[in-house]
Image (tube, rainbow, N blue to C red; front, side, top):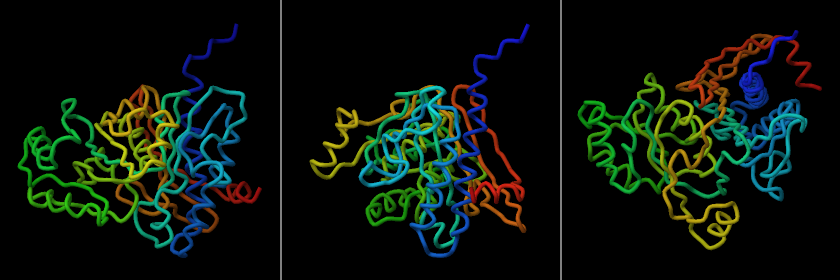
Length: 329
C-alpha cells in the first residue's frame, strides 16, 4: 500500500519552485548589468520569470505585476500563469527590483516574487504608499504611521534598550523626504539613504548584519505589498497608507477593492496568513550576492521564506552549462 503524501507536499514543492523562478529572472537580467539599458534589463527578467511560471503546476493569477493589461504585454495584472492544473494562487512580483541599479551596476538589485492562496494578497494600485517597517522580536504595535518619526524612533530605541542615536534608519533619497530626513537626523539617528529599491530597504530591517533598524518613507504601493510578504514570513512589523493625489488614483484604488484610501493598512491587511516569498540577487547587495559568472557556470544567491512555518532558507545555487541551453529554448 502506497504511503500517504503529507498534506503540505504541494507547498513544499512550491517553495523550491518559487526560487527557481527568481533565479532565472536574475540570471537573465544580469546580462545587462552596467550597460545602461534599463528597459532591456527589465524585459529580460520579465521574459524569464514568465517562462518559468508557466512551467509550474499552479492556477496562478498576477495581482501585482508590471502594470495593467494595456500597459504591460507580459506579467500584467490579471494575467493567468502556470499550467492551470494546480492550486489557485495569487502572485505578486517585481521581475527586476532596481532597474536603474542594474543599468548602473549598483548594489541591491534583485528579482522578487510572492505567492499566496487566492485572495490573500492586497491588490495594491500603482500609486505611492507611506510606509514604516521594523524587523522581528518587538512588542506588537510598536510603530505607528500616526505618530511622529521621533516618537517611533524613541519607541524602537526603548524596546531595544539603546539610546536613539544608536538607531539606524533607511530612507529613499528623494526630495519628498527632505522634512522626514531632517526630523530623523535631529534625533541623532544615522540614515542610510538609498537611491532605489525600497523592497530591499525594508527587508534589511529583518537582518541584523545590515545594521538597519527601521524603514520610513514613501515608495510604491505594489512594492510595499511585496516587502510586507517578506516581513510576514519573518515576523516583522509594518504599516502602510496609500498616497493618492487625484480622483483617478482614488478611483483605481477603489476598483481594486480598497474602500478607504486614507486608512492605515496593517501588515495583516496586506498579506494573509500563508505566503511564500523569494528574492534572488542580481547585483551584489547588503543581504544577497549578485549573479556571478565563471565561464559557462553561474552562481546565484537567494532567500526563500514561508510565513506559516516561519522557515527562512538562504540558497546558493551553481548553474552548470546546461542552463545556457535552457535560456536559449
